[in-house]
Image (cartoon, rainbow, N blue to C red; front, top):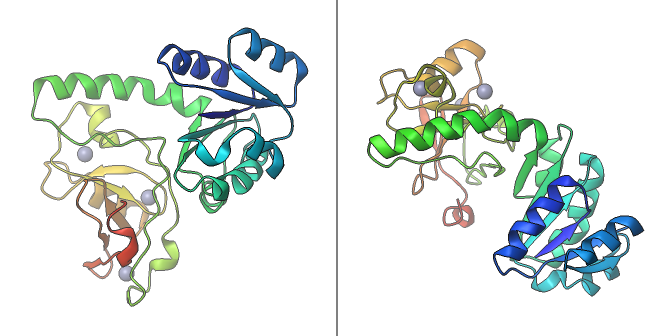
Length: 248
Ligand SMILES: [Zn+2]
Ligand SMILES: [Zn+2]
Ligand SMILES: [Zn+2]
């Protein structure tokens, strides 16, 4: 497990992981942070995480997870762009204070994004959802830190595909239903803005309502085993590219 940066987020995460028996290597440019991380019992490398040789020395190729904690999303993206290709099996997590350009981070190889603002915003709905799960049948919980990118099959004919972009899910369940305390059957994710809504078999049909309201034409399913996207304009499914089916 590789941690780049030593802010509050990284500090707590590293402590949790170390307590769980995970080896943590911290890379930081800040000598004070390095001393502190070392005192906390982590392996520390004083260096620049955008440098390939620094990442290699820190063992990036064997890392199962890379956490990039940087106040600035742009700087985090630059680190990810160097680190991700060196560690094809690692989950790359960016933790940043400010809002980030999701498309840029996705292109840089980032899988998960946690911002301070989102973390607090989703706390309540996540709590509500875990209560719901205890009282009803088990349902899918959407990982709000995971970047969702739908890759269409090469022969996909939908003319609205330019509106398909990498997004971050807005909530762990249907955003509107969580607000009102309603339930749903399946979850859909808007491929233009990431809004999570409920399917047309659900009482409130919030995914369709979102299209009616803002005209974002494309959704994908948030349910495991359902790799397709759907175009509301064409009222037709869009097949995913062959190679992406298994990993969604
Ligand atoms: Zn279409
Ligand atoms: Zn709903
Ligand atoms: Zn949308």
